[in-house]
Structures are given as C-alpha cells and as structure tokens.
Amino acid sequence: MAAFFKALLILASIIGVMAVVIWAGLRVQPRPFAPVALQPGSIRVVPVPQDLPAPVQRFYATVYGSEMPVIESVVISGRAKIRPAGPFYLPARFRFTHLSGQGYRHYIEATFFGIPVFRVDERYVDGKTLFELPFGVTGDNPNSRQGANLGLWAETIWTPSVYLNDPRVRWEAVDEYTALLHVPFEGGSEQFVVRFDPATGLIRMMEAMRYKDEKSTAKVLWITDSREWGDLNGLLTLKVGALTWMDAGTPWAIFTVEDIQMNSDVREYLTRKGP
Image 1 (cartoon, helix red, strand yellow):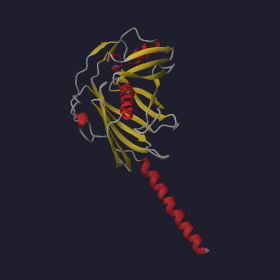
Image 2 (cartoon, one colour):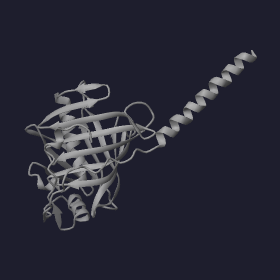
Image 3 (cartoon, helix red, strand yellow):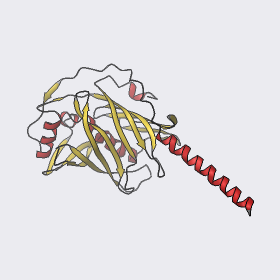
Image 4 (spheres, helix red, strand yellow):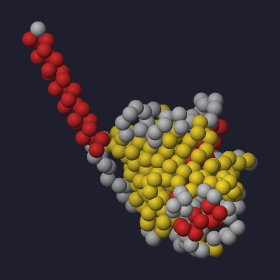
C-alpha cells in the first residue's frame, strides 16, 4: 500500500510539473514579425459622403472627419490569441495582406514558449480559396469562398474608407445605432448587421451568417467584436478584435494589431508563402 501511495504522489508531481510548464509556455508571447519588405505607397484623400445613414455618418466623422484616405491595399501585422480546438488559447503572431475589396492572404504562427508550433497560410485570391493548415491542404469550394469573402469584408474594418470607396458596397439604414452593410459576392451580395456604440459612435460589432467549413450544410451566426479602438500611425484604428461563432459562445481568436502599412504593391506578395 505504501508503494501505491508513493507512485501516486510521483504521478501527481509529474502532472503538476507538466501543468506548470504548459502554463508557462502559453504565457510567453512571440516576437513580432520583421517589418514587411514592401514599400508603402502614397495616399490621397477624398471627401466623406454626406448622404449616409445616421450611425454610419457619425462613425466616419469620428474616424476621419470630413476627408478619408483611398486605400488600395493594406498589410496588417500583430499578435493574437487563438483557440483552434479545446479550452486553451495559444499565443500567436499574424500578418494579413489585403488587396482592398478583392482578396487576401493570412499567415498565422501559433507558438509555445515563443517557438512556432504550427502555421496557417491561407488565401482568397481571384475568387478562389486555398488553405494550408497543419492537418492538410484544403482547396477551393463554395462554402470556403463564402466564408473567405465575409472574412475579407469583415477585416476591411481596419481600413473602413474602402466601404465607401468601393462602388459595389452599400450601406442601408436600420435604426439610430444599427445599419446593414451589403458587400459583393460572386455576382450577388452578402450582408452584415453592423452595430455602433452609442457612446463613441464607433463600430462595436458586425454579424453575418457564414459557413464554418466545406462540409457545413447550414450557416452559423459569425460575430466580429471590436474591443478596442485607438491611434495607430496617426489614424483612429481598430486595435483589438475578437471572432466568435455563436454556437461556440466564446471567441476562438483575439487579434491585436500593432502595425499597418498601406498602398504597397501586394499582388505578387499575395501568392507567396510565409510572413
């Protein structure tokens, strides 16, 4: 009996040490990616339209004033917490590259003790998707295109003037603090319900019905939560955002933006691999 309790104590000690190691590894943040090796382009400004729904007009006045930038591309870099499966968030770093309103590439590295343990390299280019994930490669399919297109337009919140500069996009009034955002998709359109903060006038939440994966037979409510706005490179910008599937109830990812580079030539960069 004494030997049994001794073995049990050793096992408990090993489990305790492993728990401490895991806890410590998940607390170490990765280093930021090196600056992107692309030359930023010049930015011209145009007047903000004055015929927008009331909460939309207030949002653009808060973010830009009377003039807004024309953004043709953007490279967004930062760090994140992601939860691909299970209860624990993994620290991560990310780089999202957008050709505004046209396509994107996402590169994400999840880390343990700051060391990459898996990578995601996914793209939505020329209306087609490709996902290179740790557990395999997924090619183009209708569900992934629908989800990727919603992702493209949800992430455009980091350069919201694109919603006004792209003639395919349309805002529709709902009430004092809500509007519909109609975005193009394969000859038709999809829509977001956009909810604005009554106190700040900034976008608080965007909601859309989205397919989770290529095997989904029904769409699930997908929510982007704007958690923190602040100054970045002289512009009022969304700095912290969270993504949640309604059937999960809690965010699967929380992104913190640390750098934004605009109007670089990203067409060739969209087809590369790595950061």
